[in-house]
Amino acid sequence: MNHRNKDRAEAQSLLAHRALAEVSRVRILEELRRAGRPLVTVELAERVGLHHNTVRAHLEVLQEAGLVTAEPEKRVAPGRPRIVYRPVPEADDERTGYRLLAGILTSYLAASPNPGLAAEEAGRAWGRYLVERPQPFQRVDSGDAIARVSRLLEELGFAPEPVVEEGEDRILLHRCPFRDLAVRHPEVTCAVHLGLIEGALAELGVRLAATRIDPFVEPSLCVAHLGGREEVAAGRDRRPARA
Image 1 (tube, helix red, strand yellow):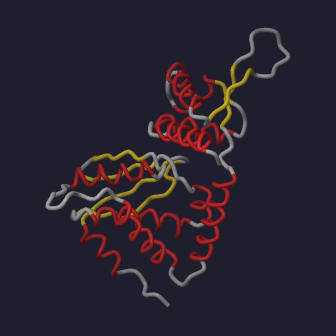
Image 2 (tube, rainbow, N blue to C red):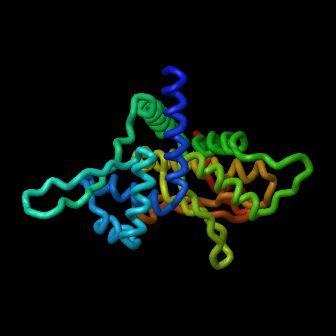
Image 3 (tube, rainbow, N blue to C red):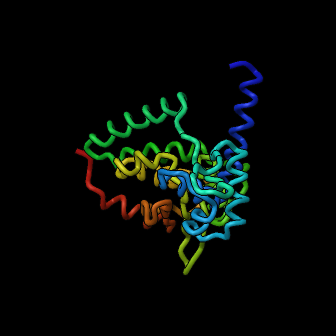
């Protein structure tokens, strides 16, 4: 790849990242992928519960980022054809290779004596490595820690939304970058994601920890629950020992 093509690819990747930083656009893209056919703005608006003008604006951003295509609807009836939208196929050669490797490693871990524990330990190590670390002598409170972990999850493509409701901290994950693997092997994929959050919080030195992840409580939503580190330690003590 020459420098011009590399710069163009990096610029397109940045546009895609910015487009998917908005939860509503993630939901729209997921609905297009799940539909299996082109959709018009009104259909999408009904599916995601937004005004059609709002959806149209989001679609323009997704189209500019190269994530969605638009074309006139093929019709035989007279009248002006409507514009239909379809998602751009996700798989390119590089991404397909990464997904193949991820699938191989996931299936290998799934066959191990304790796949969840091994996957969580791996995620925890990477969470410690990837999180934005505080400066020396800087104290990080729970709110700042959740914000830093959310930024990490956003960079990884989870479209996170931190919430505090009825005294419980949670992070809503509106997109799973490895949804296909999570459906086939949730005991591995979700454990990696849980460990990732745990490791990041531990690296930040707060008493908050990830207690569990509820996968696919809605088609495009997983929920990471946060609690005291003592609660996580107690749950880990109750896990069966490795064979």
